[in-house]
Image 1 (spheres, rainbow, N blue to C red):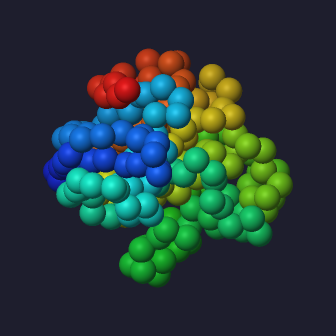
Image 2 (cartoon, helix red, strand yellow):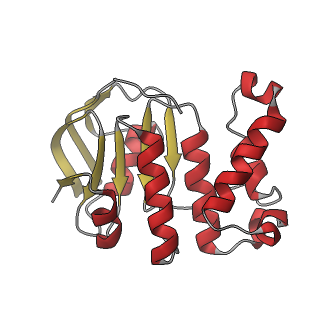
Amino acid sequence: MSETNNKLEIKNLSKRFGEKILFENLSLTVDGPAVLWAPSGWGKTTLLRILMGLEAPTSGSVEGVGRVGAVFQEDRLCPQLTAEENVALVLTAEQYKVKTQYKEQIRDDLIQLGLDDEALALPARKLSGGQKRRTALLRALWAESDTLLLDEPFTGMDPAVMKKAAAMLKARCGTKPTLLATHDQEAIRELGWNVIELG
């Protein structure tokens, strides 16, 4: 969760699926937190997947991504593990040696985001959609990363919980290059970040 001064550089990036062009010659420099806004179907998720290295662009290049902390469109939690155990999966080897101390901090974070003792005892598959999103967001924040890439991280959260999650995100990501794709106008206002409008 350390601060970093790297820059994310997107140069002349294009992505096509057959005849369909999602985006073309996209160039961006991201050197701090920003909201990625575009109409539905523009290709925000695909762009984030390219930055994560999960998808290849048709042309263009990406530099400076480094290690990524990510919230995917789907939660990608291990269904048999608790919320706490899912977040602990991203602890470094050094942190894992003193796991008890970090487990307490992770538990405190989850409680701060509104998960009670009952929810913390459940395997992830039994959590509500909003609880899963909070767990996925916290896991991304705990991961050692140079860049944060977040795809609709506030889905399923009520306004009060979203405000808590947004406050924690702002506090933890600092000046790290962060791209957060969302249509949630309330979340955009709450974060107060620069908005990159595409499409």
